[in-house]
Image (tube, rainbow, N blue to C red; front, side, top):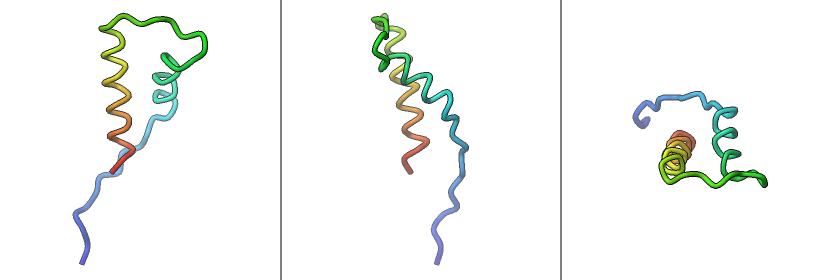
Length: 52
């Protein structure tokens, strides 16, 4: 018996790293609340793609 077919989504590691570096770098700037919310949603989306 097999489970449901899963869709393989290629990960864009370069974009994921760039998004994370935006806030995690030592010289990161303080982000406005709107930019921080967008970044948080992007990182959440990246995690959703990597965790089944």
